[in-house]
Length: 138
Image (cartoon, rainbow, N blue to C red; front, side, top):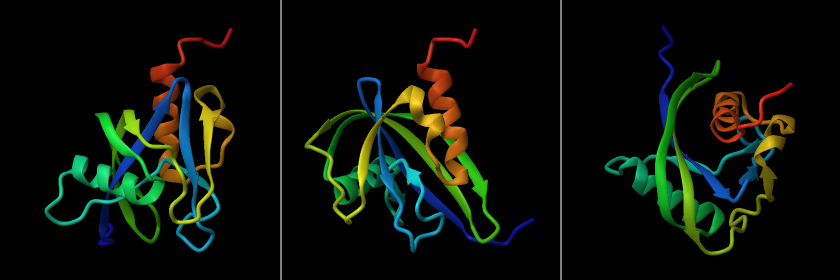
């Protein structure tokens, strides 16, 4: 059993029609240079919803107006474990911008499989595609 610290993270899958907002991780960060769903650490005394709203305001300059719990997963990297609380963000005010200098892009749900994500995000991508894509391969 790993004694690594578990980092609790609120993650936003920000939807606009059939597109999802992604942010590029800074090259100096853990799993840097890969695209991710925006979000950040849940601080002591915060609910996941409070952390999600705060992080999305700080990172991508939007005010969440509608969100719902989507899934939760724990992922162990060799150096740390992350507990991800993933929320679907279906309503927000403001135009997303990378407040920390990170590039942002809208990607169609069907195209998510072509993006390089941190390892912990792969199950999220699969779940989103199962949830939203009704077309089954022939």
